[in-house]
Length: 132
Image (tube, rainbow, N blue to C red; front, side):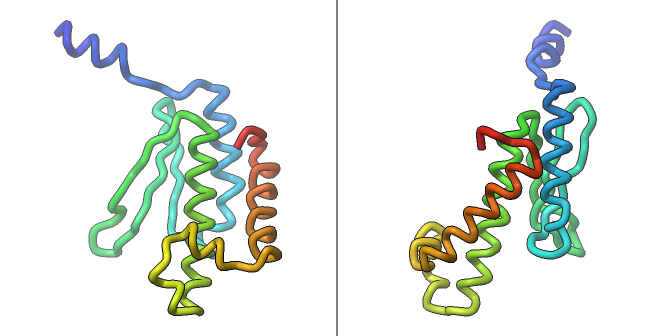
């Protein structure tokens, strides 16, 4: 019984403030769910927000990550969005398929890099994240 109590005491729950912030982050990226990336963010109440990834019709979601910090949620959703954009660019230019995302980004014109990074600023403003 004592060990169970210790585990429960260590359990991390989301604060009300972070729950509001995470909701704003999830809402900022909601327009992308069906358009650009196959990711679902679900509100898990006091446990935080859960990011569900890699959906397969037969098996459902392959991976779930729980967040109690809005900045971490923002950064991961941003990286998912950016990686999908870079993947789509690489699909149109097969030699880029052998590169990792950072290298694909470096091959882009300065204008295209700026366009993508401006989107990060757009999502940060929309979600109220200032330290991302």
